Each structure stands twice: as structure tokens, then as C-alpha cells.
Image (cartoon, rainbow, N blue to C red; front, top):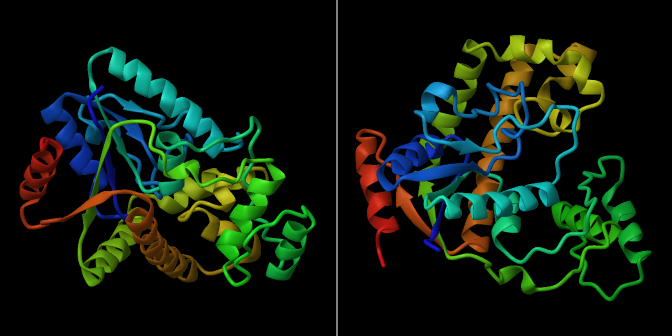
Length: 291
């Protein structure tokens, strides 16, 4: 089996364009690695590739679920592994592209989930309450008392009866991970501009068409670019505040993405040339073709 190419990086960096151009060159199919793009009707803030942007390259796991449906990292793991076999059997290369690091790693590495795995955000619980619930399982665990994200992740594992081991560094496939990067100032400016463009492209109209579904949809209340509208729709928050929150949350998310991809994957980083993007594609292809 040829190496699976994984293209990662922070939001707004240019992963979609890069993956499509690379797929044309190496005769690959693309698997979506973004948790929000999995859902139908979430087009603009998810920045999922349009049909035109896909340029007739087969794309998988885009718009496969209704926004009210539950779709977990466990579901994603099963779907990706099935697709890897199917695409490989067709003799095609595989590119996984996206920014949801946990989803991508769970698909490619030895993550062991129990059927029915759920991921809760536990917004209603304080850090102290999270710690007490973790301790109630009476397991000998190292608890990072000051890191809420780790506390949430650990409690999810315990409640899902997930085996907590160190085997998650065991990659199940030959992979090559390429990260796209740029300096922070330029990235943040691109993120801010992209949010402005989303509003120009009709983000507010998309949100208003989804208003009734906010009451039952987890993804609408957790996805950046969607969750910020809840108080606008139901509690009269101003649109300007919503826009600034989306920009701020997107910048913070980009920082977390960098941290994850640097620590969790053997990533080769490539500086994006926005003045001549073809140079970036050439560098990525050169890296892909290295033995």
C-alpha cells in the first residue's frame, strides 16, 4: 500500500486548494478531515470545498449527515478505514485533508473505541466537578487539574469505557504528514479576512435558515462560525460582537491546531507562498515523492 498523504495545518492556511492540486498530480482521492464539513447545510463557515473547488476530484465524507444527527470520532474512524480499503483497492492514492486533528489521528492510529462512543463538552460542569467525577471511577490516573480540555477528554474516555493506554502512538498505515504554515501575523489576517468574506457570502442567511435546528443540533452549538450565533438568534447579541467572536475563536483554534499537529504527528512543515501558490504545490509534491 502506498503512503497515505495527510495535509494538515491551521484554519485558513490553504489546505483545500493544496489538496485538490496535489490530487490531480498524483491521481488521488480526497477524504475530508474536518468535523464540521461532514454535515449538510453547513457550507459557508465550514469552508467546505464547493463542487467547483473540488474540480471533479472525488471527495469523501463531505455533507453526509443532517445537522441533527450524531456523528462521533468513532463513526469517523470506521468510515475512514473503510474508505482507505476501498480507494486502495481501486489503485488510487489517498489524501486526507483537514484541521480536526483528533479525528484524523483516531482514523490512522491505534485508537480503541467502544461502540456508541459519545463526546460530551460538559459545559454545565466546573473543573472541580469534572475532577470529582473522574475520581469517582476510582482509577489510578494522572489528573491535570488545571487543563480543562484534558479533563473533558479524560472523563469522556472513562464514561465511554475506552481503554486508556499509550498504544495511540502506533500508526496502522504508511503515512506522510505535511503541514502548511505561515507567520502568525499573516495567518491571523487571513482568518479575519475569511470571516468577513463569509458574511459577504451569506453566512447570516445560512444561519437564519438553521435557527430551528439549534435546539437539537450538537454541531451547531459547538462548531466555530455557528455556535457564536446562538445568543444572536435567541438573546439579541449584536452581529458585530458575533463576528468578532468568530474571528477570535478561529485564531485561538488555529493556535491549538498547531500545537496538536506538532505534538501528535510526524509533520513536515512547508511555508506557504501566497504570492505564487504553485511553488507551495511543487514543494508538497516534492515531499510526497521523496523515498
